[in-house]
Amino acid sequence: MPFSYKPLWKMLIDIEMSKKHFMEATGISKSTVMKMNRGENVSMEILERICQTLHCNISDIVSFVED
Image (cartoon, rainbow, N blue to C red; front, side, top):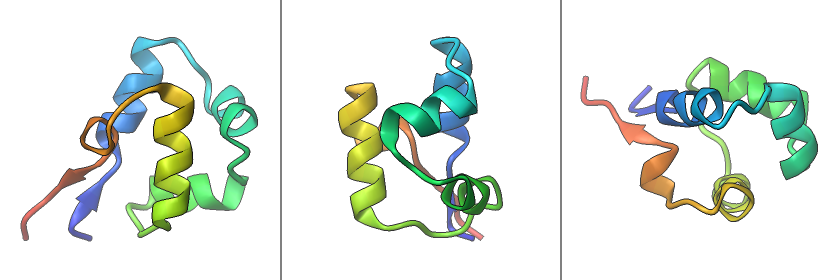
């Protein structure tokens, strides 16, 4: 699990956006959000959609975690 979505979850807290609203705004399914909760890989298309919706860079939502 070399990638972490903790920066995304922190951003959602900071902007006071619930995961439900996040899913509605991005059109991302609950199963994809669950994958992200578990630190699993998601497609670049999903990450692009998140960045476009939240007006941020990929480095704002994903971090690399060395083993």
